[in-house]
Image (tube, rainbow, N blue to C red):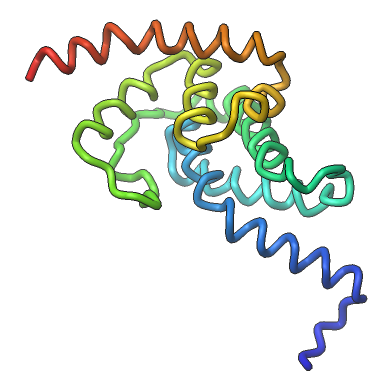
Length: 174
């Protein structure tokens, strides 16, 4: 048996956290990248997200809400970063080639859709990313964004309305 120097309950917390990190790291990094539009900042924020999550892991009441809880931390951390004085002085031009590799393959169509999603207003971008890219149910998305479920659906509908003319234009250009 391997000695870690941790008490059994701390070992359980460390093992649970390691499993959470392995399962959700890619999704958190991708979410942070799309919100911040800078890979290095996204990696920094992702580290902060997991540090905060580890420190407050005992506060999570229901383990089934881990992903929602983690995405909420990520969104808040990204919002804090966007509001910082540092971000006002940075060129945030984005290249999709810098996006971390996806779990599944993207086609050229997916690339164009993601570009249009990245052009959305932040609150609409967050809704689209959580619902479609993180594949979270509406209730979990609303909880992560700290809005009501009906508020989530209103935001989603506005985001879809903003995307529709852009994507129709893209489809008809071919």
